[in-house]
Image 1: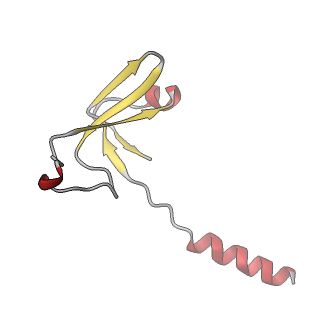
Image 2: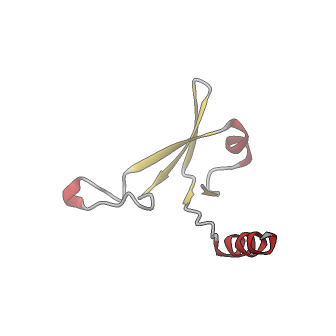
Length: 80
C-alpha cells in the first residue's frame, strides 16, 4: 500500500506545474499603509476587446505586501 502512495506522490510532484503570470512594474504607490504596483495592459485570463471598453493603454494595479513592495523597483518584472 505504501508503494502506491509513494508512486502517487511522485507522479503528483512531477505533474504539477507552476504557471506564473508576470507584469512590468510601471509605478509604485504607498496609499495609507497599503502597497500597490501599477502596470499597463491586460492580466492573463481577463482580456477584452475595444468594444468591451478594454484598452492596452489602461492601467492595472495590484496590492502587494510591504516586503514584496520593498524588494521590487519600477521597471522590474513581478510574477504572481
